[in-house]
Amino acid sequence: MSLQADRTPVSGAACGGELEGSGCRTLVLVATEAGRALYERLGFEILTHDHALVASGLGTGRPLSAVDPSVRRFAPTGDLDAAAELDGWATGEDRRHILATSDGWVVGGAPGELTAFTLRSPFGGVATVARDASDAVRLFDLRRREAGPEGRVRAGGLDENAGGLERLVAEGWTEIWSGPRMSRGEPLDWTPTGIWSQFNHALG
Image (cartoon, rainbow, N blue to C red; front, side, top):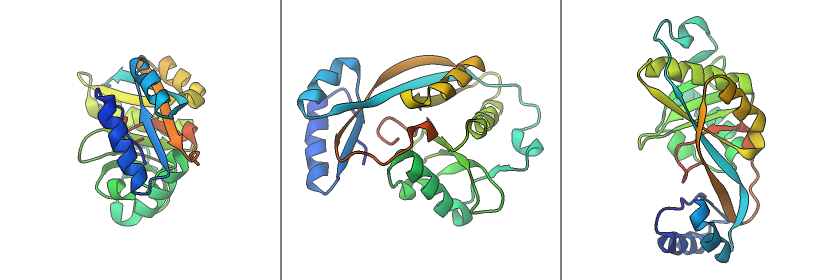
């Protein structure tokens, strides 16, 4: 379970206590440097750091999906189990209920076979998870094509994915923000190198 650090840390602390009282074993939040000390006093420890990047869109041309048959639309009926498994591997969270209502693209063969996804939730934000850096970059290329030359696309990586962040910067991405990701409770069973963008700072 994740918890967003907003501009009112006291309300965040109260929310954290409510979540733990409901059985949540791990709380995760993304703080600002200004809020870090307060959350440390509440028992949170730095887990890693989040990095937000942006890139401009690309000329429309042919969409990547038209030239790469392994990139296709997400089909919730056939892909949900595989997407939830991949998402859990990366984030350590169970976000099936959100994935089931999301729309986007996957890298894979037949329905149920996928190695990466980039999915937009109904409330905004795009989560990108990939086992391989090349798959993540291919999906970002598609998103930049969809955005067009006047648009912008966001990505988000963690300290553990330093190689991936360097690759994005080399391809024209610019880091615009970073902050500590903090946790309290049981350690996460996750793979942070698989996280390439997030729904928002409250949900991986």
